[in-house]
Length: 112
Image 1 (tube, helix red, strand yellow):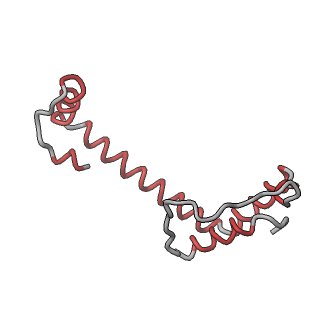
Image 2 (cartoon, rainbow, N blue to C red):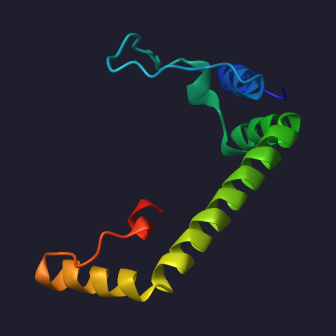
Image 3 (spheres, rainbow, N blue to C red):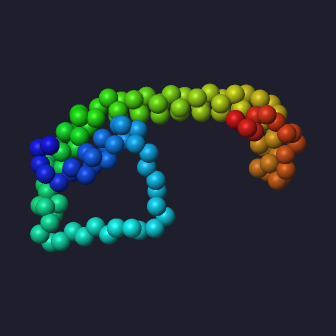
């Protein structure tokens, strides 16, 4: 890494690349203190960009795969939506639900 200070980011991204399972705690379990003389306060924009560039290049295969997965997932969602709006029942139901507050049909399309 060009400059010290982003090793924690590199660590967590490395763990993600190894498919390590994470858990979200619903409480604050650690408070990170940044003093006035902290290394992070001395970073310039250029230093941050150099470290980010290093991390992105180091983990580029993982980022590429995640982007592909997101792009493919978005395409699937778009296809499901297009299937829904091409159904007359769905359009009538959506209209009735929005304007009148009730639905006319119990459609399998609701599950999409």
